[in-house]
Image 1 (cartoon, one colour):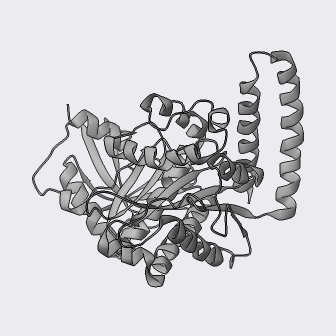
Image 2 (image 1 turned 30 degrees about the vertical axis):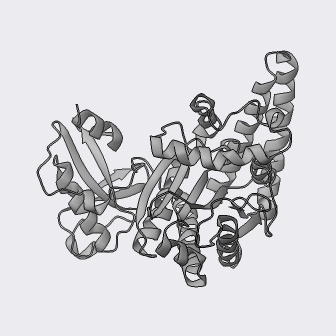
Length: 395
């Protein structure tokens, strides 16, 4: 509850700062006074609302709709229909939790502007924004992937961003509403991530939990957690993810996505990820070094690949409970080490400078039931990001 309260206060502060920035150049003195007043009133109204309501607010966004069917395939599968059905299933499951409030951007087949989707989440002062979509490709590509906002666009991620952003052209007065943003111009993407920087870690945490569930519980191929410049998330004032649940253009996966069983499996994976995310917040568990890209099992090599001056471990758990790092406490995994960070004890499996070996240990830990196990890196005894360690090792 306390974590939720401070999260609300923090979001209110960020929102007020961004509002003031837009007009600061012309009305600096006025804005400063206005900001202080708005912030003071908003913070106390947020505190009051939190004490009265105490709900964890999740906004579920079914991509596309109405005159925008989204991706479609020769098999007759429509993204807008599938996304809506999955969203309704996720929402119905979450609504069974008395401390969670679910808000839908749409519950019928209607067209909704991208900017309005974000506005719905902001007006609700939501704790999470989850946008659900389906993918498409001119091949038989398949698998799930979950996006957080960022400018680290690979060629493939840029293609996805363009497709998702092109709905802007269906909107009236889009030039005015989106300040000249051009979905076909890479330069237009550069500033999009700035509005979401504060929530990147939390967004990655949720995205990782979603992809872990897709892989381990729904038995789907996970293509990983990735960054892309997606307009629907850029103006939300809370952790946000966009989930591509699979490819409607793949004959087998398209049929799965269009089936009631497939939609239920996917919805359960998303629901459980959201509940786990909320629980992690309550326990002060952070994303820290979770990598943005999933390591595909077929890409794991058994050849030795040493990265000098760097040690890798697999983090398997974090808890306020102090457990002995013995195999009987961790489903037979050995060796297990323990470190204390603030009020949490963190538990690690393995220890090696060989990144390929540590990836195999991560795979083993996940098979033992530690589904969220991830790799962490240390250089000269200090923890560094996995991305930095791998980049330095590639030099």
